[in-house]
Amino acid sequence: MADKFVINGGKKLSGVISVNGAKNSALKILAALVLSNEKCAISNFPFIEDTLGAIDILKELGAEIVVDKENKKVLVNPEKINKTQLDSHLVRRLRSSILFAGPIMARLGEVQMEHPGGCVIGKRPIDMFLDGFEKFGAEVKITEAGFKLKRKGKKLKGAEIFFPQVTVTGTEAMMMTAVLAEGKTILRNCAMEPEIPALAEYLNKCGAKITGAGTAVIEVVGVEKIGGGEFNVIPDRIEAGTFLIMGLLLNSEIKIDNCNLEHLGAVLPILESAGAKFEIGENYIITKPSKLKAVSIVTHEYPGFATDIQPPYTLLMTQSEGQCVIRESIFEGRLFFTDQLATMGASIILSDSHSVVVQGPSKLHGKKLTSPDLRAGITMVLAGMVADGETTIENIYQIDRGYEKIEERLQKLGADIKRVN
Picture 1 (cartoon, rainbow, N blue to C red):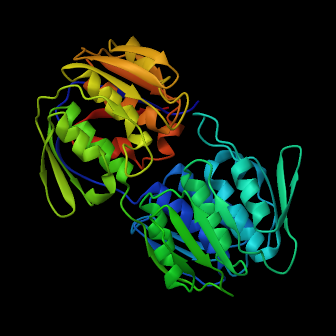
Picture 2: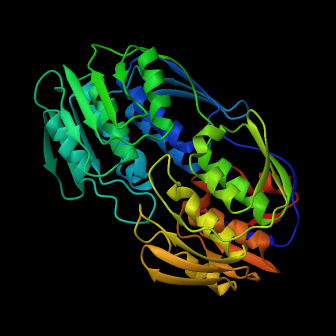
């Protein structure tokens, strides 16, 4: 049987919790390493289900990897990468496995893989990626379970790509594919999340020619080869935002350390407009007991309110004074988890697949819950910590995909949470 969390709620928190390296930064650097045959040392590495899955893909492709969990370091030697077919089990386990397609094709000439797996929220079409690869001069064949890409010449060709909708993974996939392509690539309507300039900065240090990363237009001039180096994974802004909300939910003074507040985008100003009080330092923030009022939000691409912080924010609004509307503009179905909050006593009405009306404050009671996805899962953990009585959460594999040893870290703050089989 799979593990589950058992939580006894109502415990006030205190102490320090440190933000780990960003999952979405670590995943992208691992894919980018396929472009080079030189070693890279990665520090501040988060050891979670998703990043371990990406490491397994690299190993399967032929890379040599040394893992140092104690010091949060990974050393990758990609020199012996020689496979062009990705393991179907590993691909189905990891949505971001699509990021390996472009670099493998750029380096080895072809790649074959199944459609990626991962989270269940919303429809995440692969057409945008395949259309992009075609523009680089790849031959695209749809197979029964996935697709096969083949480079037509000795090199991919630079391309002009306009993203019909803003996509973080699409922006990164095309940026990486362009690095070894012949000529100039221009990407328009790009995502601007902090993980994108962090990746571009590393690739540029290794010999790439990328400009505009972090803006809506990115230009890449193809180069002959990419070197190796050192990459420090940036702090996880989603984890930082989630911990901020946790401190406010439990009306507790906790210090969130090792965070980059500039990366939080709209989250901090919106929390402050709801009445949240903080002490802010250079790389930390301390939550203060605050009287909160309801504030409506619409999720938006960075630097707007992050869709990944919407679930814990929705929970926060169940404990705030007044009524508000939460509108999810990125993923259809991301608000379906609110049914489970309603069973705990929250006053939430699902208006349609993209919006809910929340009336607070509501008293929550412990229940048996199931984690449907990563961000809803961590929200259920927080709900269990707020609720009276015992809460059990199943399918916690989804939570382990993004939060390393979360129960141990929360126990140190005073939470009554344990992992049981």
